[in-house]
Image 1: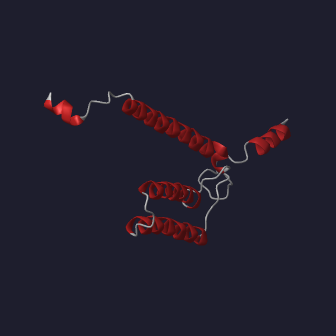
Image 2 (image 1 turned 90 degrees about the horizontal axis):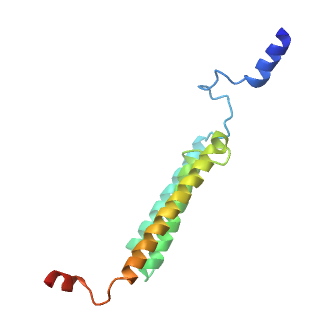
Image 3 (image 1 turned 90 degrees about the vertical axis):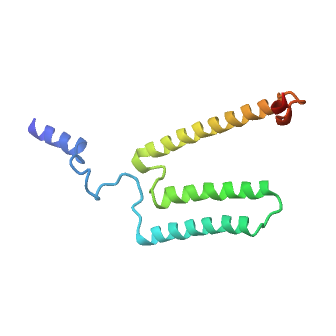
Length: 137
């Protein structure tokens, strides 16, 4: 009976007490100096390009510039998450990825709803009203 309990303890409780050590594998990639430098160089490049696009007025359309800046910003978020926060699909047993997806869904719903409300409020305003008429009455 004592052998069975010792075997069960070894099989199910082998990682108790090792939470402070680096020898366990929680699925997160432990980066090296080269990994941090890669992340740093990518972050610098993804910061310099938007400055160049805006300051050099590379595109005539400001909406094109804005869309490219948003795309580069999204890429930079991913670079920071992967290289500096060490987040991937396996870190923390997948809970980090689930929390990230939930956050993204909430952000998309909030932004889409806000834009929808603002668009419909703008469309449904009375056409003859403007700020000048409102101030003089």
